[in-house]
Image (cartoon, rainbow, N blue to C red):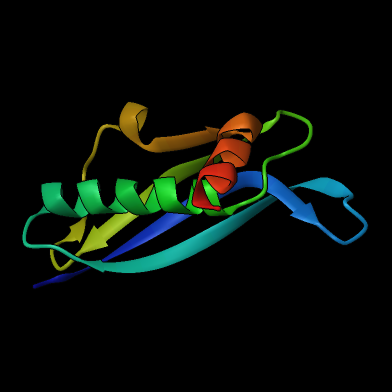
Length: 102
């Protein structure tokens, strides 16, 4: 399967101890395998949802937003609908997710 490279912008939070959360923005890069550019986009968005769930929420907004900024494959940049290229999780969704895990 061909390799694709996804770059994400994450708007979340960082905890530096003592339960103090600060807003933070960072970039994440992931490599994934897919047979087609559509499968690559679908997998990239699945990864965006995982990143959103695993990241702290931004205390200013109460949510984590992960936006797919670029997706590259063997043929170069992959075109995709930018309006569908964001995954969002609220602080409540984070709390419920961790409560269900236990």
